[in-house]
Image (cartoon, rainbow, N blue to C red; front, side, top):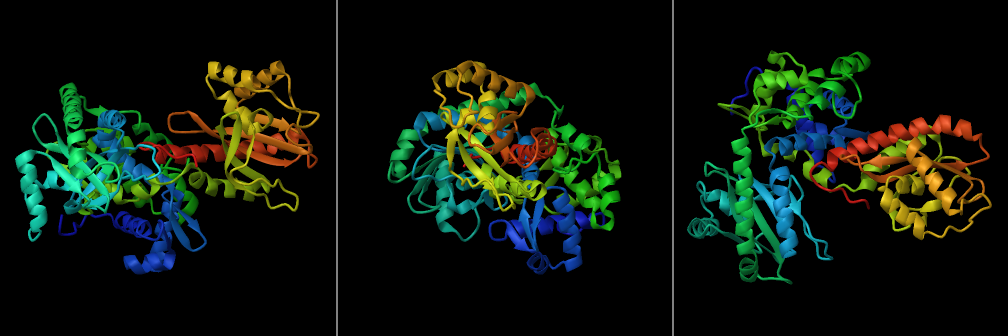
Length: 532
């Protein structure tokens, strides 16, 4: 749409403008005053929008600065879930990457650019990766020539036009260091049963391993096989003809706006008054609801999923169409890859410590004790994030510290989360040392302690690692429910009784773990989150 429709929802339009301004800031961070200047909005308007987006978990505030928050990943996830390409074709890309020992990417056209959806990486010192949501100019990458070959390349770029003609003749696109020096790739189009190009799959390498010609010779035969398998998967999905919604829908209706834990935006409006823009929250609900729909979404589907009146959902859709995030087709409304510009690539680069640290800060401010996050590393735990308490006497441990898992509350949580056979094997090879007179060293009592930890859902250590040190820990889970880390609070055991510590700290720990797990699920839905 070129003319602004009368039905456009102003708060939704302004809210997305503020979000784009923050995303475009240095590291996904911008001062409130600068956001007002960039967007042309009044400072008071930016404040109200920022308050709403912060409550929704899309932004967070640090003083007068606004930062992109993990909850914003759900907006891009809606597109990735709705199109279904990462889930359907990603395993084929991963198998090809394993076969060739080279990264493999999936990308779709987005206006004059190419938007990356997924990449199967290889672990190397010289690493390169396209994160979900990354945008490249069409003329600077192999997929761009593939997509342009279906239409007309931009006028005035003779080099790109020549590459497009070559693609039309050969059906293969080659990038010989167009993106950056040393980077080469070869790409093929993936078509649906009607013959339309739905995405491109690329094998990427570096000239230290292959030049462009050598990569094409190596990769093209297995790449053709992979494309055939992808197209067969697309055909099977089309033949299935399933239309409807999946379990994602419940997220919108039952838990309310992402990250709030509220039942409805009505409760938030009552709580925050004019500081909460209800129509902005509802518009984002409509956008996220696309993730629960397979194929084009009908207005009735989206209204039902969000619990909104049809007229309210329709105005949000008109606004999203006007802004270029949604297209109306004969079969319904289609979410477009441009939604990924709303911070998805930046969030896809976050690590577990980066996701967890703001929550640790909040926890420490509440309980005034030190809080840490650790992962299992062999028979030890390794600290990956930590915030020290505000007391004069606090626990002094730094990120990177390793401690024996058997004698720590976080270690017992992580050991308890292992499959039973693996847990028994780990405990069987550990020879516990008595670090204090209270350290459990017997094989039987250690197994029992880990089993009790698994049963009650938290770990507890009373002066086993160091005299005077008490620690309680809970698991942190990813979107699939797997325990990927443990969160703990450590304190001086002489400060209060064990019962008082547990009553005061365990609920706070569980709430914080839930928030970290929710953010981890949002960010890691379509790409793994590094643990450090």
